[in-house]
Amino acid sequence: MATSTTAPGARPDRRDPRVGRPAPARARRPRRPRRSFLPYLLLVPAVVLELGIHVIPMLVGVWMSLLELTQFHIRDWSTAPFIGLDNYRATLNFHTAAGRELLHSFWITLLYTLLSVGLAWLLGIAGAVVLQRPFRGRAILRALFLTPYALPVYTAVITWSFLLQRDTGLVNHVLVDQLGLLNDKPFWLIGDNSFWSLLVVSVWRNWPFAFLCLMAGLQNVPDELHEAAAIDGAGFWRRLRSVTLPMLRPVNLVLLLVLFLWTFNDFNTPYVLFGGSAPEQADLISIHIYRSSFKTWDFGSGSAMSVALLFFLLVVSAGYLLITNRRRDHA
Image (cartoon, rainbow, N blue to C red; front, side, top):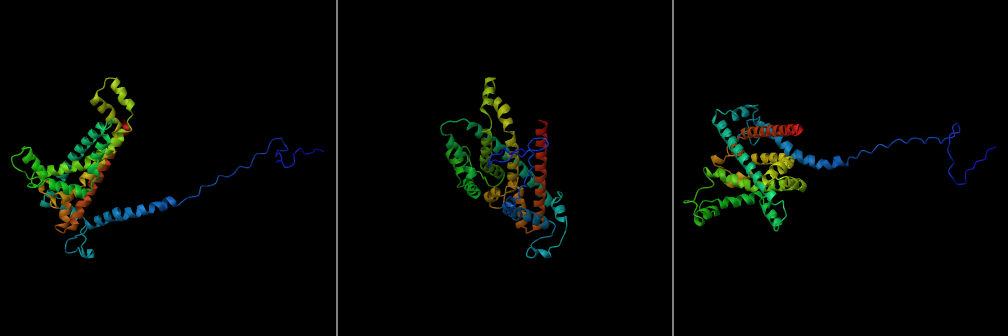
């Protein structure tokens, strides 16, 4: 008779009596992870604010563009007649006076945006490259360069409006009285000079943002690449063109699109600089829509212009992203 050799208190040897091998352990079913609703709850405030601040007002604006919403119906929208796409036909008919004014404002805005974005990017890349190497006083220069971006918009633009005054402005005082570069004090906020004054203020406000993004992008460029290019005989401009700019391509793709959208939609700068009524030479489309809506009380036409502007910017953004993604995939 076989006796058990298991020691007292020890675990018995579970063996299969037919083959003399340990019996396989019963497989445990993996527990399903519990679904947590905490991430969705944390997103609720952001979704509610997005709906209340952007989505719902945008839908209301689209609905307003389909109504004959003038000063006679502004008190009670329910009395405004539904006219469908008539506001769009009247606004985008470039054979009429209103259509020609809108087209003129569009070209002014496009030229202003391209010049502002291009100059802001050039100043940004120049400042980022110069301040890339450590030297004494670099932290102070970085702080000074970021000052225009840190200032409130209204404070900065109001200061510029005082500087550009004809009789009491500091700009004319320096150019005419101190340096003697001009014989007479020009008007900077009216006439042809108004466009260039607006452009200077816009570039002054936007280039620190480009400088900040490009300076952050340069931190990811390895120094070994510049050193290898310098050993191979590449000068400063060759290294900039062949090493720095290709490495900054992902940053530039986003930066240029953001600057374009911000500048094309810019309302605060011309509104504060010119006091709400920009001259014809600086009649940006944002000011034109504001004047068409709140000066003539034709909110239906103003909403139609806003929706058309939104559609244009969506098309430009989608086309830009499509082209850049194709180039990236091809590369």
